[in-house]
Each structure stands twice: as structure tokens, then as C-alpha cells.
Image (cartoon, rainbow, N blue to C red; front, top):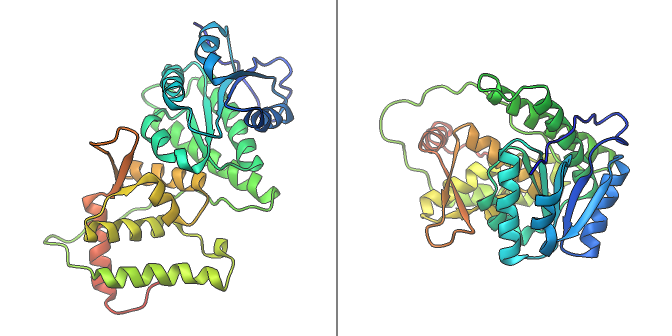
Amino acid sequence: MNLSAQPLSPFGDYADCHPILVVATSDGARRRASDVIEAGGYRPVAVGLDEAADRIELQPAASGIWIEVDGDGGSLLERLIDQVETEVLSGRCPSVVSAPFDLIDPLEARLRGPGIQLLIDASAADRAAALAMMAIWTNAKNAGVNDDVSRDSSEARLRQLSDEISRIAATLARLSTGPGPSPVERPEPAAGDAPPVSLEMLRQMIRARRLRARYFDEELFADPAWDMMLDLLQAEIAQHRVPVSSLCIAAAVPATTALRWIKSMTEAGLFRRRADPHDGRRVFVELAPEASDSLRRYFKEIGRVAVV
């Protein structure tokens, strides 16, 4: 099979590019994906979920694979995701998976490749940003930036570009998605046991943060990194496990944006992902020990000062 991607430009003429293979679970899903792809100048080739695996094997070349689902595709979807991830990890072409919120846990548990974008309850702006990111990713691959020396910095730059594209697209659509977190230097925590934190204090703080949305536009105070850290610390103290879907809700931003933050926070060593030993379709997220220690020392230092 040869799904080699042709160099693309997100600002040029796509007429001569290979098509984007669209796998859709309904006519509505096909239209959502195809409309954005055609508006970007690409040629979509749409197939159903039941024929997708064979079509991927037969497709001589593609600029990308776009999976648009509006319901649980069961084992067919699971096998397709595994097949597409193999194609992406081999470097042949990028992929987009767009799905409703109730599929976030099983999809997040299966998707690992950096060339796969997961969109949840996506808007037209989200899809347009993902399409542009496909082009950037393909150009970076064809420019040879994925060697061992530069892979990490290149992928970080691609994620940054993805966030910027999403922000611009959302602004044009009068939406707000927010950028990804910027790396910062953190001091080493002091030696010794981490101080205790009041569970009730954390719960009051989280309630106070949510209460602001009653009086102001919620996007005005969007701070998903802090909201997720508070939620994970609360869960750690209460000895609860937090699946990806619950953490996305706690972030108080669109799910696609929350997923980018979770990925960035995990790569920064602040979060850890753990597979559910009883359900392979779910992943839990927890604070890394260093992040938990730093949070607890922070709350000890500020004492009774109100922090919202």
C-alpha cells in the first residue's frame, strides 16, 4: 500500500493534490467533513465505515484520512482507528478523527500518534483549523523535519501552530479556543513530605471559579491548565480516578481545546495517563507526583488567602 502524502500549502492551490479520504458514519457526517475539505480546495473521496478498511488498502495515495463519526461505530470503528493509526505512525499521511463527546474516552484511549488530530463536538472553525494543520504537518514531513535530532522540537512547533490556527479560525467565527500552555521554568520543590490540603477548601475554590460564569462570559476567565490541576488534586485527595472525559469538563473549555491541554501537560510531566485495568476503552489522568507536591506547597504558602 502507498498512502504517501503529497506536499501541500495551506495558502495555495490544492487542485493537483491527492484527495483526502473521508470515512463517515452517516450522510450528515459526510457532508460536515466534505464541505470543509472542499472549501479548503481539496477533493474529498467519501466511503462508509464498512468499506473504509478495504478502501485504505486500495487507495494509491492520499493527502490525509478524515474520520467523521456521529455515533459509536463499535468494533468496525475500533479496527479502523487501529489501521489508520498504523498508517499515521508509519509517516504516510496525517489523519483527523471528529466525534461526539460521548466517544472521547474510547477514542482517546486508542489514539497515540502525533499526526492524528482528535476533534470533539467540533465546529466548522475547528474542522478548518484541522484541515490547515494537515497541510502544515505534511509540509513538515516532506521537508524532513522528523529525524531523530529535530523530532521533538518540530512536533512542539506543530502543536503550537495548531493552537494558533485554531485561535485564528475561532476568532473569525466569533468563537474562542485558547492557545496551548507555554513551557516555564519551575523551581525544584523543597525536600520533605508535602503538606496536607483541605478537600473542602479545594471544593469551595472550584465552586467559586464556576460561579463567575453566572455573572460574566465564561471565556473571559478561561484557564484550563489551572482548572484541571485543581480537579486532579481534589480527586487525588478524595482518592477518585478521573477519566479524560471528566477532566475535559473540568477544564471549562471546548473538549478539543481541553484535549490539547491534557496532551501538553502530560508531555510537560505535570500529568500522567493510566489505562483503566478493567476497561481498555478508558484512560485515567492523574497529577504527576512532582506537580502534586508543588500544588500542596503552594497552598501551604498562600495560607488562607482566597484564590479563585
